Length: 417
Image (cartoon, rainbow, N blue to C red; front, side, top):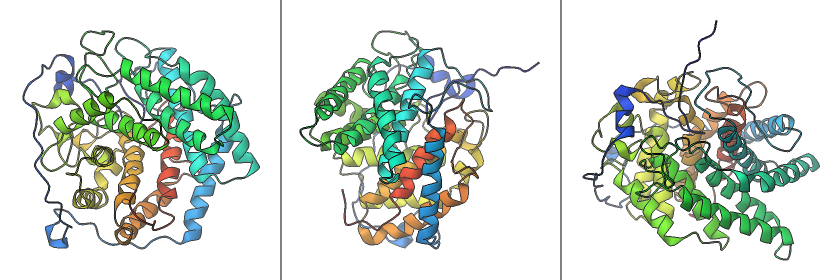
């Protein structure tokens, strides 16, 4: 007989509740916060870099385009009949903690939103892509407003609100100003703001579990990378004129800063503030988080996230990518070195692509070459990318993240966002 292994997770980046590493999650009290050190703001010299990646060749442009086409083809073939992507079928791995039906409602909506974003960004304008986006839009606009937390302790819907907003922003941009559907999309974005206010952690930011009290306002601490993903979505919505509540943003930014260490690695969650040197909080353990946290803080006006900081952490990511690679496709979350879980992989590289976009154009090709070469090599035979066997959602979110990252490697860009 098979034995079910109980595991707790989030979509994209998840957490195992083991007593040795995670006992702080159930009862840590507020205390002294870690204070970040000021960055000099100067351009990094090679000798000043704590870690430096070696130069690699940029793959040919036709190889990059072919990888994107194959990834898009996978998403088109894999779309469900109702327009969504993913499902609760167990396709390898273990049964993680996912109370039904709410957890899977959240997972499917989040994955569908990611696939919409990926197709809009990289799918082109073929009839097949347009039809897939239309079908997915219909599904998302119907189901996204209904997504709530599964149980008082499982708040996976936070990921849905974040990636839902990002997909809605892209759908909004596809519509003309006089299109009634555009107004409907804008109202749904505002509705998602309300959901994020409802499920905001009591101290600001967002987590995806509440193992303390199960209160109406989640009592648990936020996690740095979850909050970063939400902040990126809120920033994108602001760019189309739909500004999120200022207090919501300010409290989220403050929560990430409290989790920032002097080297710009970030705690996994604020409950670990008394254990900053746990393996998962060290630079290697933060490889999948620092990119998201740095870009989120940068875009929301934190001048400590200079070009130097982004460059240092991009060098770290590619020079020490083995820490993430060893964890890729492992079955149990956080079982690898530095407590890295497999699902940090494509999440971390997508946000690295956003960091690259922030650099001066002349400095981007070095890192674009690394990212392109890495992702092309890891593409599966069926055109997908995946990093952790997660019911039937892993190929879909992995492919979406990889496509959006590769799309940002196609040109040198024209300047900072």
